[in-house]
Image (tube, rainbow, N blue to C red; front, side):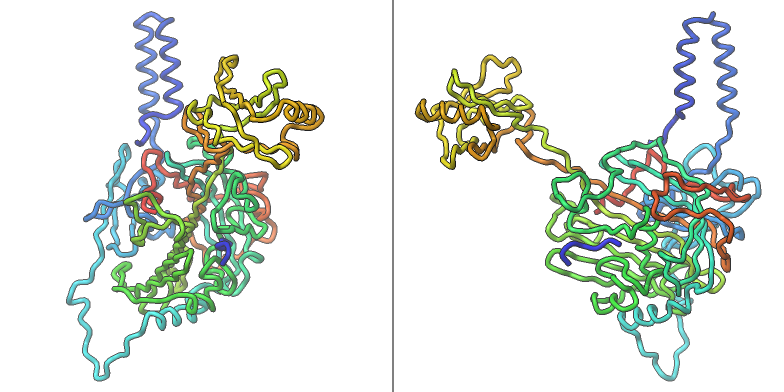
Length: 566
């Protein structure tokens, strides 16, 4: 549970690159006619390799912006995926043989149906969705003798929360789909891990973290994307100048792995227990903790949904949420929640999607869909920011006393900026509690690397010799002699003793590809060990229909749009 503190597409595969390098070698060794014969055979081999997926990208027909988290389902097969944050998606090419129809839907857009046969196999397919609006004649309502009372935003949410047990499954069921966790740095995806999982849930009236079981069909540590060992390590909350931290927030593990952590952050599924700040316990805490406002209706498959915005503003934090609620039965179709750090500002001119310049701490988006008169998970995305703190690049390595020159010898690990290094105000030395002044500060000309500075103290020779004798028995930086160096930079501009941080975005996501109502967990089966990392020594069991599921790996040439907006 996350709580705040104190409150271009690749044009060739790796295999093709290796083939190309091999032919360069062969070209030098073979006669020309034999070389071109082999080249022709290799070209035919590459062309004969059939692509495995149809690759596409969803765009808003008016703004041309990517449409994230849209449902892309194979009609009448109960199988599907969710588009990535950049709008991209992949569909196994095998479904083209069946002549199936792809049904694409997203909140606020008209549902679109496309024959798989109409997709191009060899290039990226741009699919554009039309914003959904009801025609005027559809919106006409027969006048009633008594005017219906309009519900306030808070009343709508209260009805939705009271209806959870009626709208969501309380009987056992399972959801199978694509899981991934990854980071994003300034260049793109980092540490992408993928899996196909089946989640056996005993129903919304049970405690998810205790009763739910998970089977792993397959997993992959994707080495096609950059791996960063520092970003993979655990969070360190004890020291700010550590390695990996979430500033001003604490992510509890619940004794579980990444997928277990993700499940905890589904506030709807866990509506009776704490989930995250400041939603806390959805059933009892959401209403009193936030201010609510009703917005214009949103449409899903031409069905109108209430749109309710809510927010919480504190001195250090600001939280913004949105719920999309059925006007028919008050089922919550989608819930978004974003928390910002009000003490940290984005670069000049940059604003987040809530029109402020505060930095994001975390964002959670959960969407459910109707199936067999109950609401089942479509996807959950949990996004938080974190920092990697790197040790100072420029430090004072050691200090010695030269009895012959009667001076302090300061040795840096890098060549210092000369103007900074020769400024005596940047050195603060005390001997037995008394500040030491200097007659001069000079660069040590005997050091070819220009990393050593000599400090000549304004001190009687007898006192200097006494200090030298003491230093020979104890370390120079003992209690007798204290040394502090500041405001000095190296020739590359690195400030001495300055820790630097790198910003990352962390994502954990699960996209349901198939819902199985009334499915119970097998009695004799191996399940994921929740306390063990999902990608380390877990049991892998592939079902007979394993080929019905696939990993919707992000396209390497399309960067996610969301972090730049936040």
